[in-house]
Amino acid sequence: MSEKPSILVVEDDEDCRTVLADLLEMSGYSVLACGEAHRAVEMAREHRPALVLVDFMMPDADGGWLVRSLRAEGGRLAEVPVVLTTGSSAGREIAESLGVRSLEKPFDMSRLLELVRTLAPTSS
Image (tube, rainbow, N blue to C red; front, side, top):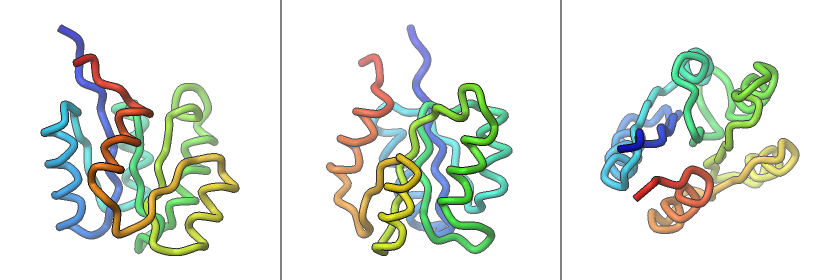
């Protein structure tokens, strides 16, 4: 039996983070979750997720900072797929400039799952 792909959910809104984690776990993923960009970098180093789902606007640093930090780590973390969730055109522009996917908030859960399955397929 193969191990479930892990997804790091970085979202400062606790309710949103919980809903995302529950949805992803029910869809066959192992989920790591936190509400701060700086903590997310530490978690990514430790756990090497298959995908990072990150909110653009957070209190300690924006999602663009997190993407740049992961890329600066080199190795596998530099290659990990990232989806930047955002409700702003600035967030979409940042995602595009960094070469990562963006998903507009509020997002459709089926579209979110489709994107996640494309970037981090499960073996089921």
